[in-house]
Length: 509
Length: 111
Image (tube, rainbow over all chains, first blue to last red; front, side, top):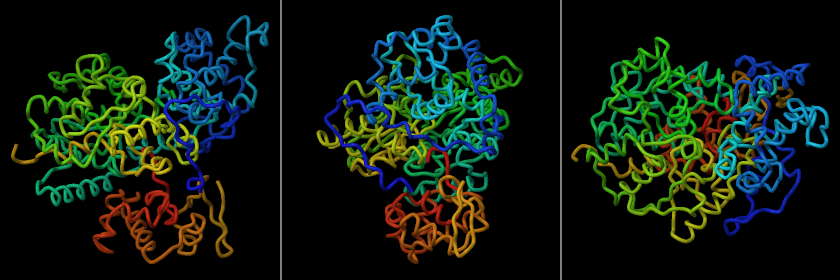
């Protein structure tokens, strides 16, 4: 196994731009999806014979459907503002991991086939034919992008590099060249209900065990209910919350919040996944099909509110896309969307983030805490990319930054910020988002975490930070894996509701 | 896809070396996979592997890390019922490395 031999790059004083290492990551290629995995999602099983024409045709279709993509292809002036903003470039030094160069892998083909100048004078305008080498390069480098959109914050034209990556992956899938990690997981979700492949009975067994543990630890019978019809809240959370450490600590925290506030809630075995990897591969049909499970579960259970747990990209999908995808939120007009709209309680935001729910309750004085229970922790907060740059919380701009921090300050005495320019909307990706969280890309993941590790190291050495809170299952899983490579303890990362769980007073207020 | 040879028989694995058919698993295959992972199998390791296989037979999924630590704590003593102990046994992570040796599919998703 590759893992134990990989070494992390040396941490330096943040921030330094690395010397260029052309081709350093050219050989890095995640496992390609096999025939069975591809066909389950309706994609060709292997690379089709006429892949060139099919790929150009698909590109034309996407350019016609998404005006944004056409603008992004045309607008770039190669100013270079994005070039040193990508964590994968900063960690690997490979110039093709500069966002502008990554986009140009597609832009050069766009010019060849969709612009007059590129058709007539290809060499003059940097136009390239889509050869097999170029296609392989796409696969390699578009799966070295976590779609975190940090580069887009710095682009004077607002080019959304993630959309270019998504389009490239969509084209690759359409010619039978998909990635094993994401596509296998999407298939599992359709079959079993979640990314993990956790069947209903196993979920029920895990939740029962959790109830026993919490009773033993706190002396209070906190419930973790499953498939309860008529509950007020349906909680949609990443399946990692049922399985992995430290994720499960936050799940324990959500249950304690509902218990302390007296809100009836339920999880669903049908919609036992908040994550939606359809977004990672830029495929609208998958995005919608995955999101539909949530609507079906909400209608079956008759819930009044839909709340989303700590999952970064899920919150982007829920906040930004669920309305038109499923009718959760406003916008959709089909009969089931209308039915759901009339069922949900519109005194509350729909959908609502668990942090919004907890913070509202804190402000109302409905929860009380023993902050000293977190005194062994000096906490910092890592903004997760999709929450920071793809969504919002609360009722004003920037709520997605303030609310998680407000909660941390309400439940812990020691809170420290990491370096400005690396948090809030300029946060770094953990290094494992957007379909990269797989062992075959561990080398890339470790290197891509370098800037975040350097800034974590600053506050660890300077202010004694020993806990980095996040609200994303990918961040938690990724950091747990890579922290030891940088000499940190894996238990240093955890959830915001893990901190809530530690300090919340149950029973007597 | 790959294959491994154990005791003159060949077994199919996926790209990452996980056995594709868990029914084919036997102790010798487990030992072979452990060797590939540089894990020296002791009785304590086998306790974990056996529990994983029992749980999988019942639930068609590996147990949550928490469920595993609790079960091991009950069997081997409270001081062993924590993930640190499991990481000592399986340094690359109890969920993934132990599952591989036990012949179970790899847990996927955000884990």
